[in-house]
Length: 133
Image 1 (cartoon, rainbow, N blue to C red):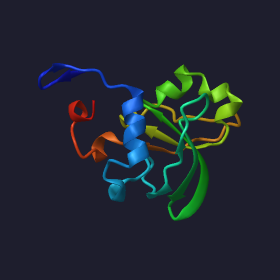
Image 2: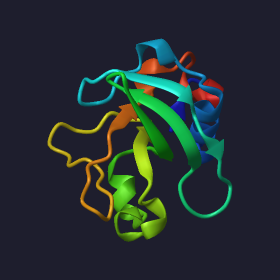
Image 3: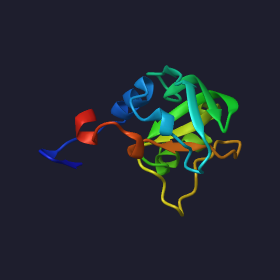
Image 4: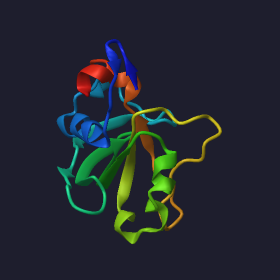
């Protein structure tokens, strides 16, 4: 990406750290479909195979939801990484994105066909991306 002082690289690991530390305006977070999101616990950061965070505790429109969280730059990364057909990702209940999905873009779906709610962090970040990188 091009930054104020030249090009810089932002890795998915940086996005994972932002989620792990809840380093964004969480009180303003909503799902991309407009429902309310509250993070009671972001989950345990998984540095092995499978979803990025395990055992998250969330509230989606005040409904308690427990499960895993996957972090990507864009919603299309879910399909590009082959998660839709991978049973290890069957417990994912939230797709954390950097960029909001395009209006015509299909949401991520698990292997069982269930749509995965998503939240876009870019509008909620406390700092610009170059500072996080």
